[in-house]
Image 1 (cartoon, rainbow, N blue to C red):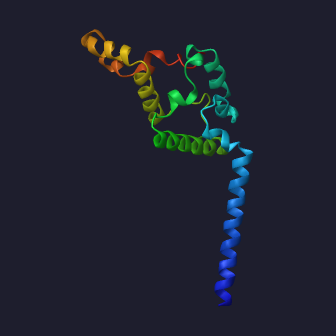
Image 2 (tube, helix red, strand yellow):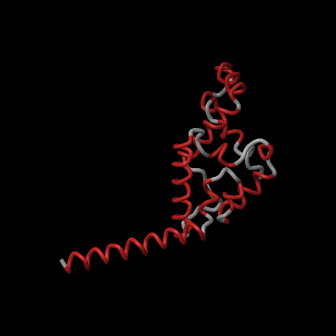
Amino acid sequence: MRMLTGTALGVSALLGIACGVVAYTFVYARGGSYLTDAPAACVNCHIMREQYEAWTRSSHHSVAVCNDCHTPEAILPKYWTKAQNGFWHSFYFTLGRYPDPIQITPRNRRVTQAACRRCHAAIVQAIDSAGAAWEPAYQSDCLACHRDVGHLH
């Protein structure tokens, strides 16, 4: 019985420490801000400062925030994407392995592409119906030609 009590105490202590570290990290990293749509959350980490500044100069500044283009529209996929991106941004930043300048991942490129098509549905419909008039490789890739629209460099 003593062994079980000692083990339970040890496990409880480790869980308490882990919870404390998670809580401290959440507060220190302003974790609550990531639950919002506020663009200021994206610059909590200085890795994204250049993208934020470029967004403030873009035509999308007055009509879209970061999450409008960089997360899916549905609530669960949106927060799953935010959690994944936050984890990997933190992971690579902590290890000093972030590419400079930061590059969009293939998955996030698809999310952004879907957002372009959703917001600009009428334009996309006209382009897609033009068919052979457009290079097929570019019909479904807005970012191939318009990559600086959301972040004017």
